[in-house]
Image (spheres, rainbow, N blue to C red):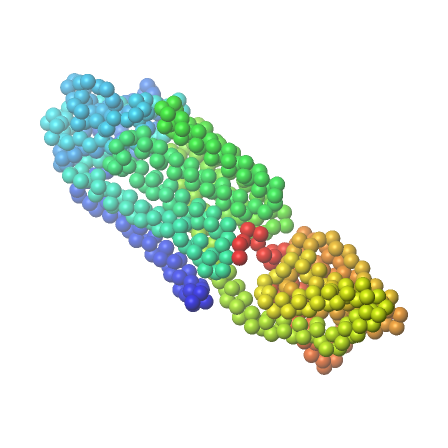
Length: 620
């Protein structure tokens, strides 16, 4: 059953997912164009609600261009003019405000609309619901029936004044981004929500689904749960959640009556996303020092975000006031993470590719921070850069999962061959004449040295048990385990050859894995065909060491040696050596290099690439 799931997953699902994403993106783009053909509402920005002039922060007056939005950053803006003539065609005027107070009033002061609280001369039905922080505008929606407008105002014959105030010390938003106006009929806001935000809402719900199910379940079906995939799944989920709140930010007040809670939801989802992104960065680090520093960075950012949330909920300082500081905090944390990845790129191609794929995040984030001070384009860079990066990461990990699927299938295909090879190896290692010689030597010692005979019998029994256990072992084992079994074999051979066989060890590292009983055939060849063929015996040396890219096991002897080229053409099968090479290659990507000089000895080097070693973050 599991194999069938893997085959389906690797063949149809991966392809279907990519094709589905492309088709969904096309549908999304088409549906995004639908609002331009609707007649039941007209969406407007601040530049078109009044036809006239505007002034920002007491500056000179400029003409309002009906075809363009007002992108000036401001603390207080004033617009003088008359309502757009299309207002009389609709029955509702809806204001969508973000972090601003606004007031629209007639020049004679007889008519006024505002989202400010505690104005005794204004009808209660013209206000957004009461907010808990009186000094915080939050994210609100104000709907006004046009039937309550004086006819002179509605027909565009009455001079009007619009005042918009951004009550924060740093002007981080443009006028049109802070306040939108829509003329509509009944339920016009919900129509706009469906046509404008629903496509992106559904798209990012799909992203959330990816995060919750696709990557964790896919990695589990492939036979292991990977911490990196779990982190990326969480990243997808919170990115989707973050983009959903961004797309629905103009409409949250339709369901959440408290405008300060609307602001809290939008801001905190972005901070949660950044926290999970930092965790995903950490999952790509392997060195203990860099991972420890990364843990500190994640903790610092999470605590600072939590502190900002507490300040907001306790009416001390709202999340818009702390936004510039959190922007800088985000940039610093991301920059430190990228530096840590740079440290890991030395000799690590995967870390370098990961670093390059995420570098646009720092660039776009830096542009947004710069925009807080020089007002480039209203803080839009981050979302665009993030969407491109996340799309790349999703496709990259889907391809990575597909590669793992192919490797899993290939692994299954060679299991039968490996099992047969293990049987052959075991038979060659406990061949009858070896058992006969070992038992004969033990029998002789029973009279000469009973204590040594007892120890030899126990060692021989453990050696046989190890060979039997190898039939059950399908995954690579730590070298320390292989070395322990190897010493039992050499103990028995030393007992037979006595002073004619010397054993030397130079073990510099054991921090790697390899197939069980893959080194013993090489050592057996050194004993049997190397020093065993030499009249006065010799020495077999086993050593290990680590390079930047691989672990190496070296078996050398000073025996009779042989001509490597003549061995390849001597007509013999050499099944044992070929099986050993195949197991090392298929299970660990290993390579066996044999060098020999007649009369001087033989050296066999086993090279095990680090990138093929089992991942420490993977749980079988």
